[in-house]
Length: 98
Image (cartoon, rainbow, N blue to C red; front, side):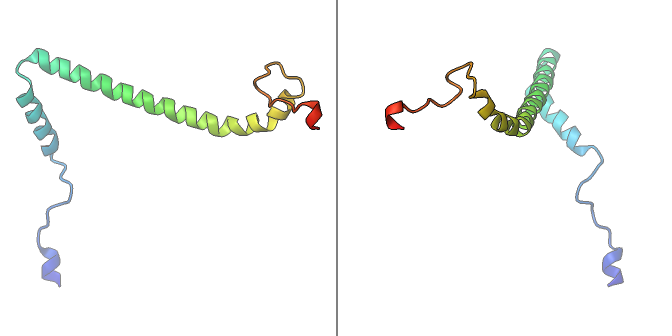
């Protein structure tokens, strides 16, 4: 049992930077000159920023909906007492149906 544990095992994730080196080599294979490299990096950075801002916007919209929907539901009967916008409240039934 002790001899099995003493054997050298490679770690699951290596932190020697080999992944970043492989990525750089793949990018160097794709681009032919430094202008293309700068363009690719600009595209990647702006795409990452836009993706981040999209996530922040969606998270903010969802949180606003979660917190403001109950207020909207609780106060909607008050709006219909004096409707300023007729489309907000449900139409009243005609008198002959009552």
